[in-house]
Length: 74
Image 1 (cartoon, rainbow, N blue to C red):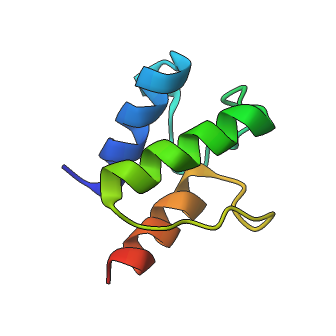
Image 2 (tube, one colour; image 1 turned 180 degrees about the vertical axis):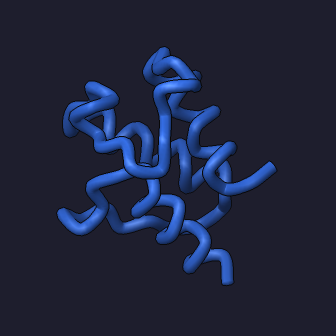
């Protein structure tokens, strides 16, 4: 399973997003995630990947988070 697929699955579980609507270019606003949802998502991602993620304003899309996770895993 790719990093994107894992992130998408976590989004589906946490936010009841429709999996087919989650794309690399999807923004948090498009997925209807508010700041509290984003914090919860980061905690879930950190647990899933056993990494530490620092969310910032540069992480605007699912793809940005996937890249950050991949970089942290290297």
